Length: 379
Image (cartoon, rainbow, N blue to C red; front, side, top):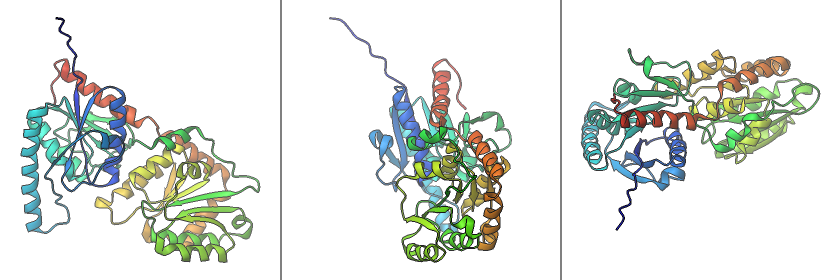
């Protein structure tokens, strides 16, 4: 009788939960690691909903976790207890499944899992989607071996952690990555001027109020060339439609835009909130953007994202406090009248963007697994 030995592939655990900004890079990494033959597992909190895509195909473990920011003292104490219990649950889980590497994606749903990895001396890394290290990742930064970042200019790093940083970028959807090589459309002449307005997953009322009023202020010869594609909230659709109709501006409005990659490729200017996923997509395609950071985001992280893009010459930040029809009209008038400025910003955006972030992130994981298997020590 012949004994056949099949070597089992290393197990990589992804720690993620909460918003799509945390879930999407985990899903992208899962798809890339699956191609490379790794075994995968997901650890999330018990409040997480059903996962789709690559995450929905792997074994999921749920533990206790609770956020602390913005809560009352009694609620914070309860969350601390939940985090402690979740850490014990993760420790027990890791003793049973023995992962080779654990990578977290921010948010308090990842904290117990990452703490357990540190206590068990398991190789670990975190991925930060924003230009400012999030609170959970700041708590974990000194305990992990690698800090994968989406921006070259990273803020909020604890002292002594800069040598851990690896710039991987923020993974984007395959449909967006395919548009990476698309040429910036010609601004000169009398052809259409395409403006894409995205307000996040549900649109943004401030964009619905300001953008139509700003475009109405532009000279007629410019207005006649403009075609706007704008994402709006359901309750804003009718009013926005009436505003564009009154100013005779061609507009396509929807609560959900199914062909964002194509619209973004065709855009001369994109007007957006500055969440990590949206910014990454705009940079990957290489389009100049006017960014209006959501002023109530945790630690004002959207402002840091916008500042990073602005500083790279790839777009322009407009704080919501100064985002008026008059100011936006003045900005658009100057930009649309200076094609060379738009082209340069598009080139800078393309230079900052990357379509290989998932592969880069998978490389970080592979390196950690190899170091562990070759006798390297985890952080």
